[in-house]
Amino acid sequence: MLHEDYDLDAIPLGNNEDAPLHVFVVSAVDLAVHKLDRLVEIDENEIISLAKAGKFTSEELRQRAEEALVYAIGDEGTLRSKIDSMVKELEELEELGY
Image 1 (tube, rainbow, N blue to C red):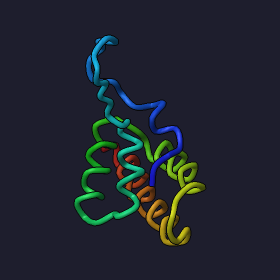
Image 2 (image 1 turned 45 degrees about the vertical axis):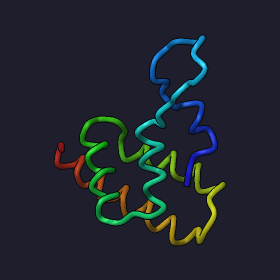
Image 3 (image 1 turned 180 degrees about the vertical axis):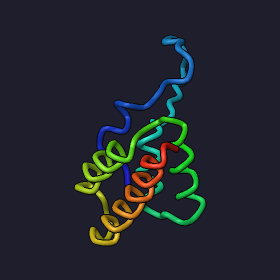
Image 4 (image 1 turned 135 degrees about the vertical axis):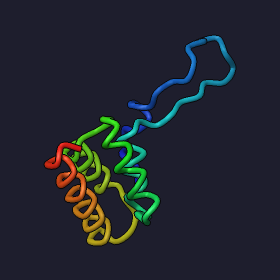
């Protein structure tokens, strides 16, 4: 699952406009949204690590994921459950002041 605007928020590596190849890295929140699709233990741990590093908040993840859900392929109920579960976990960590 990817947000439709992931490319607009991607981070360029290098800044040589004359280069024949331009490389971009997706934003942290878009990477987390993509990981929600599979959401196994390693994905959960990586999402938590990104959030703890201050790359996004639980609310930013929820908003971006719900926007991406409109374009997602698969069972919406399953995806929504994964979003809710991960956001709840991040909210609990935020309450603890991670």
